[in-house]
Image (cartoon, rainbow, N blue to C red):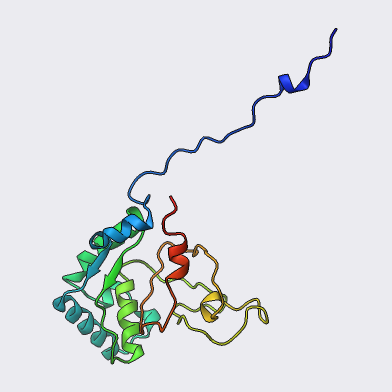
Length: 193
């Protein structure tokens, strides 16, 4: 019986079939930049007043941040809007930008209370570090990750690799404008499909 060339018998290399990602969570940064009105929401003066009243109410009760729940932070007009935005984060495009939270010339404790209270409309806080912190600040502590590999990325000025947070919703509140930075890495990958 003649020998058969093994190359003739081998199946073709496997090529995975990938279905295109579709739906509201499939977007490209360049497209989103052109449609900012769809993913950003500016608070009205009345909504800001609701937040400020809720902040004063929980502070008057002496509640610590972790003790504040949605029912402690009533937002009769803004609350239904935040519910819609939460739905967009979880079931839509996956993000929203909330503009107009007053932070200038305010004590950090009041800004933190407002941030926490609004956050109760998006879900329950979970610790994101080994120390159990529920709320933290993103700034350079002057610690090198090389010297201490357990240092969290948000506490150093070194390059940040892309990552996925281990939670459903991540929220940030900007207390001050950065002197520089913040856009380069995002632009680098902005136009990839």
